[in-house]
Image 1 (cartoon, rainbow, N blue to C red):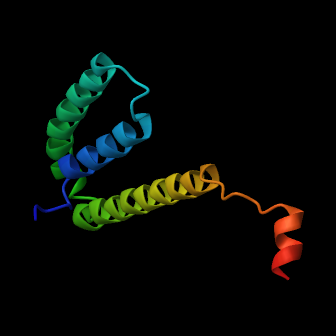
Image 2 (image 1 turned 180 degrees about the vertical axis):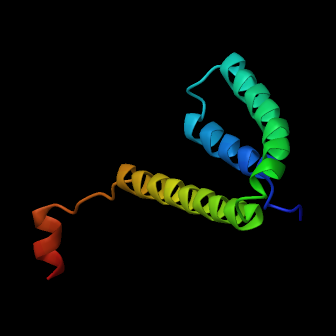
Length: 102
C-alpha cells in the first residue's frame, strides 16, 4: 500500500471523491480535464509541502485530510445505500390479505 500522507495522494483522493460524485453525469472531456488538473496539482503540491514543513507537521496534516476524505467517501456510500433502499419499495399487502392472515 502506498503512503497516503503525501500532498499528491491527498489530491488523488480528492479527485476520486469528485469523480465518484460526478458519476456518469459528466462527459469524458470534463473528467479528462479534472484528471489533468489533479495530476498537475499533485506535482505542485508535493513541492509546496516541503515549504509548509517548516511551519506545520505536514505528515499529520495530510493524514488528517485523508481521514476526512475517507469519512466523506463513507458518507457518500451511505447516502447511496439509503437512496437505493428507498427506491426498492416492498409491496404493501392489501387489507383483505392482512385480515385473513390474522
